Image (cartoon, rainbow over all chains, first blue to last red; front, side, top):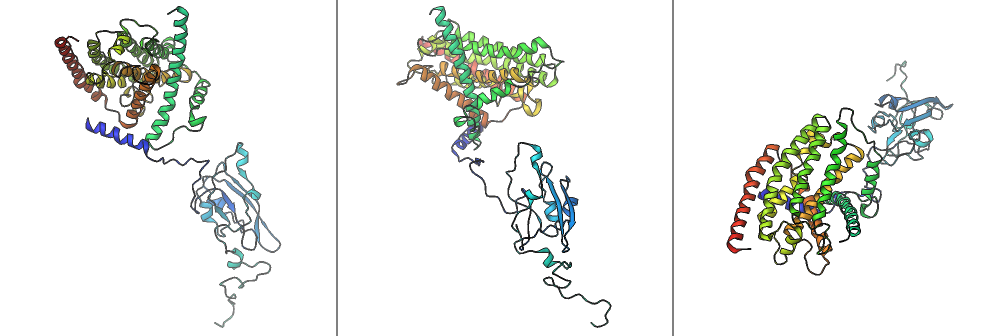
Length: 171
Length: 317
């Protein structure tokens, strides 16, 4: 009997406690930088696309919502001619970001992407590509990788020594 | 009063009570939210007041489906009984010294009879739905309401003895000196608990215990017929609060404010207490519920009646 009255009193006191609800459209919470929201494609510091169209994100994607088509530029760089993410299927797991070898695909703390029509949730490359570098400001894949492209031969990348002549006998 | 006046009063009372019950739904959602440190509905209209209208539009546009396995006439009849019986009980409650729809000399018995008839609503709903959950809910509701009906009546007899009348107008007038919540405190507590059980509210909502019985006796109901059950519950809460205010807290009596305002304030206060108890207490087991009723509340009510009777016999009033 006493415990019943006591629990009623405790609940009554909560009437005057501050509310825990965040009134969403008026007030938005600050999300952490690693929050897994809307997916973007970033550019390297020179302003070129980071994506090399390796298809690893499309392979890693559990609901298979990423589709792309690889092309090669005349300077040797690979790029996606088509990059499409169907956000009506995306589960925001972040596997694509983990799989990406060039930090091109990134998830951002933006979740306000509701649409009135389902087909508007299919984002093409021009919707995904941003002008900045995203989370990794200084990173440039072609300058870190040993792949030769026009204007950068083998051995000219950062932290890279000239290639060893495997047929030579000298150390 | 003339026939036309009675008709006008009846229409006003009908819409007034329905409006109050609708506001109770809103108040319950806001209050429960506040008790749980939430906001509750606050988007539709100022403070979310129009949420009730939005809910009504929603429920009226839903499919009014009757299951093919149900007993059609019984299924349709059941929800109307609860609305009719609870609304009819308001006829005997004096709103102000002058405004009472029918001052019959057995007003209290009329109220008790109507609340007994409300049992048919849940019993027929549970039976007519012809589904297991509904039947279980209906059986539980009947057992609970019949048990609690008994000492609900007995707890009120103390008030009747003190006032010397079954008429609610006389009972309110007899409380001009001292409200009956003081001499009849036990009766008030017992009646309050019985009222909770009669309206099948948490903690006595075993007939519709959603984690065991889906929705109990109204599992198969949808659309307008479900809305009638839903509204019937809130009209019942309003009715029980109004009866508590009338029988134990002096009805329309009170200083400064006009009588109707006092009546509404007291009723609203007890509605809030009903909501607070819903927010605070868990649901007992069914055997605990029944044994609590018969082994504690019933003897308490009888004892209260005997003591009150003795005092009234000894002192003569």
